[in-house]
Structure formats: C-alpha cells, structure tokens
Length: 376
Image (cartoon, rainbow, N blue to C red; front, side):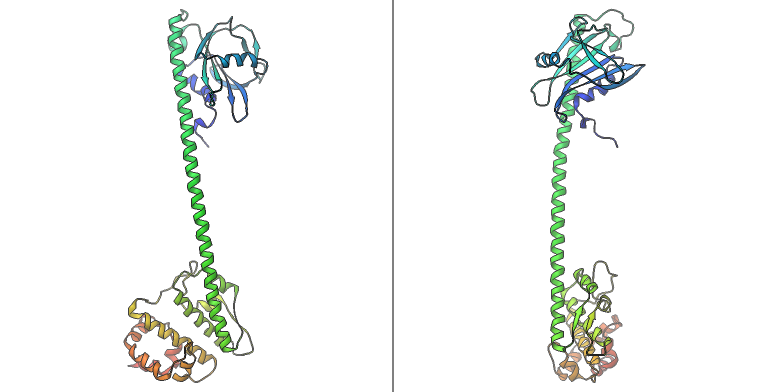
C-alpha cells in the first residue's frame, strides 16, 4: 500500500527528490541522525547505466571527519578533489568511504539542521564541472565562481524548502492522527457505556419479570421458572414495559394451561413469550403492535387483564363465569364490575377485535359477557 512520502526521514527522501530536479547528477551522499535508530547513518545514491540506485553507506571509519563537517555553521561549501576528506568506493553490495581519496567531480555540501537543532545533517551533491547538470548541454566551460554561488544558493534554498514541507506535513499528520485517535477512543468509551447501560437495563427487565413470576408462583402454589432462552429474549426487549408485563402474565397463563398435572413444575420458554405479538425484541420478527394512543390504551389494558384471568380459570378447569374471572385477576374485581367495564368500552372493544382478530381468543370463545358485547 502506498504511504505518504514524509513517513520516512526527510533527508532520505532527497535521494528521490534531487535526481528529479537535477537530471544526470552522478552521486548523492547523505549523512544524518536517525531518531528511530538513535545513530548517525549514511546513504549513497549513484547513477549506474542511466538508473539511480540507493544503498546504505558505511561511515564508521570516517565518522570523526564527518562530525567536524556537521559542526560547521556554514549553510553550504564547495569541495574540490583535493580537499574533500573522503571518496566513495563501491565494493559489492556495501559501499564504503575511503579517507583522502581523489574526486572525479566537484562536490557541493549543503548543511541543514537536524530535527533537534543540535548538529547539521549533510548532503553531498556530486556535480559535473560543466553546467550539464542544469540543462546546458552545449557548453564545455567549467563552472565559474559566480555560477557556483548561484547554484549553491538555489540548491540550498530548494532543499531546505523541500525539507520544511516534509517536516510540516509530517507534523500536521501527527496532529490529525492524535485527534483521530482521541475521537475513536471517545466513540469506543461511549459504546462501552451504552452497552453497559443496555446490559443493566436488560438485567432490570429480567428482575421485573422474575418478580411477576414469583408473585404468581406464591399465589398459585405451583413452581414456575423462566428458561435461559426466555431470559435472553427478555434482556433484548426494547418496547413498552407495560406491554412486557402483559406478555409475561399471558405467558404464565399459557404455560400453565399446557401442564395439566399440578405437581409438575412449569418452565416458561421463549416460544411462550412469542405467543403474543407485543414482545418487541431487536432480533425477533416484528409484528403489528396494538394501538397504544389514549383512545384505546385503557381498553387494551382491560382486555389483557381479563384474558390473563380467563387463562387461569381455564387452566384450573373452572367454569368461565364473571365471578371466577374476576377473582383470578391480580387485583380481584366483582362480576358486575366486569360487566359494567365491558359495556362502557363496548364500541372500542368492537373496533379492537376487528383490527386484531388474533387477540383475546379465550374471552371471545368462552366468556359470555364478552361475547354479548361482540354480538351487540
């Protein structure tokens, strides 16, 4: 995968940059401090058969002489073959520097401060003695002193501008990365908090349902428990808590009706909960919910309460009378009160039964006061 050019050391990037602005340059030698390796390293780029190749350069033997050059405060210097203190010799894959060898070409040394401004990094540019490196191909005259001053001034400023751009871009990327990591960390923390809140809410729902089960168990005298699959579905519930209470009570009555032997324990499974369409969990198929606006909410609560009580009456094999249904309600009510409540809600009951024919099946099939409302 491609990366930003400034990811590597900016001095190392000069080995690709300089041949682009000075086609035909023979060699480039750089000596610079690398923070990642915590040492001064050297690199050589030379032109071999019209192709530039870059290799590491051994500088151990010449390092004291190089340090003196790094301590020099001059921004750039010209060196002839007589006064440059080394020559590059290629020996296989590991080029080395030999002290006080002669040079074939004139060399421009440019010094730029390192990242800590403690000493200078060195860039040696091996130029031809004539202006051919600068596009002047028909001149065999050597570079004059004025030529060298102009060349050194332009190359020094060009290289410094390039290095500044590299360092500024790298610094900007570091700031962007820090902000991005901070945003990611905040998002991860928020997600953990949401997950923890959802987990705590799910545990609270389980406790509520377990309380309803325990309450009914104490009242009926039968052992009732919630299965692990039912507990997981309750944890994932994201609907109205009032509807969840209705579902649990209906599930209890439904489970009881399927276990005839009163000595047997009752286990409420996931499919008991889904016998009613109001349990809304994120990973379950979504079914039509009953209208809960003010117009119908009280009527729905009344019918759900009577349906749960009717299921208990049916499970106990009692006669489906108003008295038995009323006494089986969580808060017992009289038969006349049931009749009055049904009569007061008759128009809404007729509308709800039409909209939801799958609901309140026990009341519709076996409870005479409810049937009378529908017949009217």
